[in-house]
Image (cartoon, rainbow, N blue to C red; front, side, top):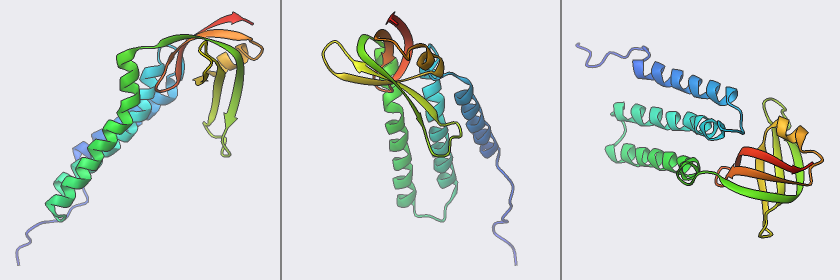
Length: 171
């Protein structure tokens, strides 16, 4: 009896490459600060992990012939839709650039999840000149510096809520 397909447990080269890309994106996301000029690259690194996961699923489905072609196409289309959905906010921020606003009546908030592992987030909330409330993520250094501030001027990305630059008006 001749075996038609020999099943091997070998790891494919593209799987190794995708794993290395995921590790690189995670490392870059951890190293890059969440605010400042690298706020948008950090956001892209965070989302790249999900993009690479979707690419892996699509490549895996492309190689698997045991599923019906229609099922594979539907799942691949869902992966592409997920990638587009994940990318929409940072791409819009990249296209439009940061906005410059003056915040008054500001508050700084420190949020930490129950696990406490890599989960501290710092937020700045305030009232914009037109009366709307704005909440953006800031760094721990900005949090400590602005605890007693009355008003600040910031450059921020409106769709991801990341701060590019903080100008303290009155401390």
